[in-house]
Image (tube, rainbow over all chains, first blue to last red; front, side, top):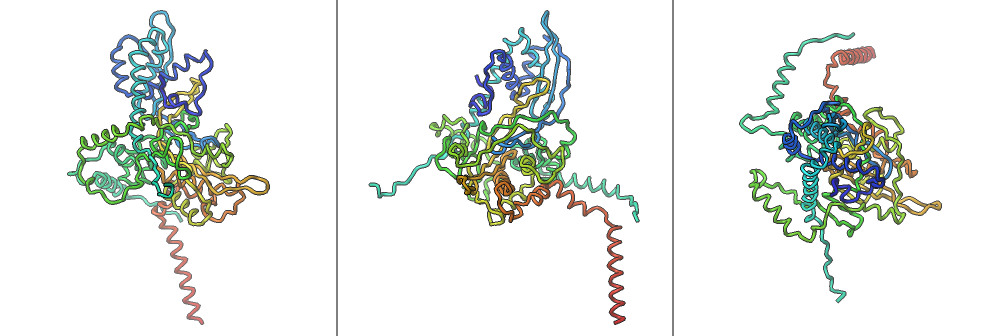
Length: 175
Length: 369
């Protein structure tokens, strides 16, 4: 299922996912996107459900900062800075269960949302561990993707009735 | 002579206390919440984000509340706040062709793939005050009216919000000068002060955060003949664009979120001759939030400022980069303007004694004559 609107609509500038070795990265990007668009309460509930099954430490505590948003003149020309957006960053280190290796989870979340960023980073770390990935894909990522798709669909449905249906009045001379 | 003046602390404290009371207004009226401003005064929030040059609806709504609805003051608050934050990096250039449009119109073609999509526009409203709004609406009624309209419109079910760019049709025919960019990182006015001559990247950044009223007046002046460039609204689109950012640590782009943008691409008077085929020129406007008036103004002023590229004589203020770019920022402008309120007691004493001396001299001369 496409996660971002760009994937869904094959946005003009999206990069082709060609290389097979990049598959895990593509998966991770999709999961991170799902976590970015998630609502905090869902992440909180999922974390509570799994509580005590893992331990993590902060490599970077949640911190608000800026990402400069770029555009292009005419959407294809000279790059320019449109303005900044507020983003919360968090990085965690997750200790492995049993024999696995530790993983680092990253989150860059729009707005000042420290708890969202912390939970998103935690799930990014969990999803990189084979023991967790499959079950979390089912219990968390798939529902989040479905919700995002529903949001996009609802928006389109709200807008669709405002599309103009032109008609031309018959003027008689053709008859 | 400089005379240090102290005092006034108590008066200032009391003034701030009074300001807080006036901000709150009559205590019998419920206090406005940030969420209410964000949701119900969303265009004020959009303007503050655009000119504050910081996209965050909650912070902008807070700024509107704190500034008692003075949007220029709110913009100042946002600009001041951003200086306290670290910069994580720059996004990939947003792709407005991949925008999920909520409004998209063209004044150059009637029939365009994707269609003319009006969205939530003030256009075609009668601009009559709606006294019904004076009382809170029955929300159940309002929402059922929307869903009813949705159910009636089954044929549009295929509309996803993805529409091709109108100007690409003209571009493919070679009738429009193409926009070709390099991958050179753009200049950044938040890091380097404005220098002239300014390249288009810096000009566009300046215009994107420029005062809306200033841009509107300049754009209007070009329409009235002060450097006119005969614009058509080739395409105006508004909607959500996803923002991709490549963190250094990861090395691949991740979605950070999505922002609402308004974009205007203007088609302007053609150039050609001397062996070159006639080709339309273009201007570009891209601003945070829903703000069509500003996006159109930006496109017109961008095109006016490109007069040098097309060997046009700069006849109007909008074509004068120094005039436009140095006076467009309302935080700078309002700061310099309002510094006039600071004590100028000594400066004024100097002028006063000079005027008195001149008058005495003139009086003496006329008496002597």
